[in-house]
Image (cartoon, rainbow, N blue to C red; front, side):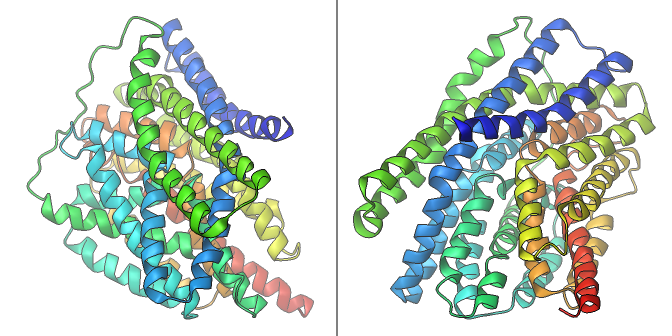
Length: 491
């Protein structure tokens, strides 16, 4: 019960900022009906419970599975097996990522089915899987991370030149959505499992980071390639929103079948791999085996409850808030609301707390958690505020921000301690957690839907991409601070 209480406490704290912001907007400029308030409250409750159960499952089953699998893969010493295992594991873990499931459904909804959710899931998962296999090779052959990232983002830059604005925004958003609360700990555990077999402790430390960054590049590439084959698709400039149901609980009941289907489809391949590896490789004794089975049960129930809460009661309020502010032409309220949503939600993201503790431990206390958290939250706040500015200023396109942002990030890699390069690029996935991929994305899309000069597809997407970029720059700047402080201390 201690673990459940801890997770519940984390997720309640994560939800409080969103509830406060919604309450303040309700009292001032976006009044809601009692039915909307109750649905939002139930949705928030479901998310807290679902995410808590899911994260317990991650701790008990998913992370240990990643560590055990990484060690087993490396022990084989067979290159073809390493590549095949990397591809299969990358695909399976991507399919099961809650953030990607929500994002894929949102793309389907916003494009009125022109790009369906299954296409997004499969394309992103294939791209990620290929790059996970490449990430395994990097660890085994000691290829510096910055060289791999330079090549990958140079390729992405060339591909982006020939991409439509729609697929550019969706592709970069997908890279953040797919590296969420399931994929990040699993991929980090895989990295640690393989890198621990190296004798050099410094090499182990560096190789423990970077796989998430490489994998997320695969998501971008996959959707940019899809865009070339789907260039003749046409999308509406606004959402075809129907009348909301007058019945308070009907959306939750209607959401049960589809959420159950998504949950079973997401976890069946992962469970299959676990059973297979237990039979041929792990051969765990009863106690750890029972612990992992219990973890999978927690994760299954948690994901189901989470998806019901998100789709039936939570995201609708984000959409309503953004749309109402845009309809009332409260421009600066939109910008400031976006900033504070980013500022407070990133502080409360459970994965960010894990990351900041990890950085403090790795740097032996030279870089304190607060020193990481303050600039990180401000950076994410500005990223969402800029997303709102993109909606209000048609001339400001996504590539105007991403291109210089990534050029700066790639240039910084040559001057920052290499450990911080991996941490910074991995942190982009950590920052785009369940709150960003749900409420914040809906808030931005609601504003884009209602703003006269905006397009809900090209302007409604891109926010997650900007949120993912902010930590890459912020934490590399932090690497400079660490480098200077260690030099002064003579370390």
